[in-house]
Length: 301
Image 1: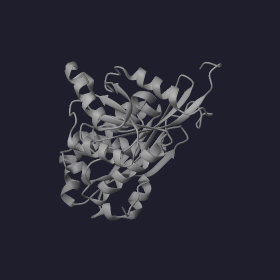
Image 2: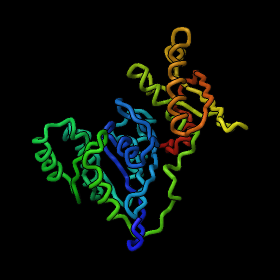
Image 3: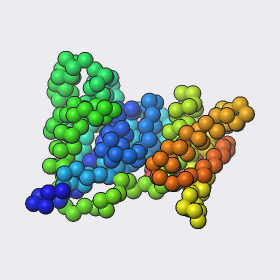
Image 4: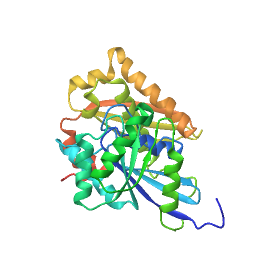
């Protein structure tokens, strides 16, 4: 940190279509996992804060759920959370998957930004997956349609060109004392982060549709005398057949999910974790207002 420069601090909201790479960018900046990622769309369900320092600036990323055409109550709440985050940030960033290009979901987002007269930074992500000669025409097309103050082309997966983006944020956030202690990476409680990591593994191992029909809730997070943690998580599904899929033949699937999640949690938290997973059927859990309160989502949208 340069002592002759003023400290800066502020919120940077990342919005975009599902699977554009917002969570990968957040984790890259923080240097640790604070938001779960998956090749499947609509992984992020709530607004996640990723906190880090760049130059003299504390940057607080608001990683929002992907914006898409919602059909279910949960979908509507997720999209509302994303637009709420867009209103809260000091700098708004539209993340676009350069491989998908200017698709209908990105067009709909820009239409809404134009309607609200909001200016954003355009971040073309996944440039490592696109022929370089296609990037400038795509950037020109998006800039002609939307109102963008700056454009950056990056790869969150490889880290390519991210430093220039971070430096821009560090230079343009307000002069301010830092809001969080320097070592803070997120304000998400550890038990909720652990539940999210379990949900990430469910996305990883289960068939395409099932992860959208389940939720993971932390029931216990208890620090033991030897400094290890006993963590109990309940996976709620909507039907008995879904429960059988998660448990697997002879309990093999739930065992694999638990082992993979525990190993990652132990590496992340640098503590021994005793992880216990339970699977229960709760029909229409998506209609339970308490579930939305736990995630910081609005039920009646």
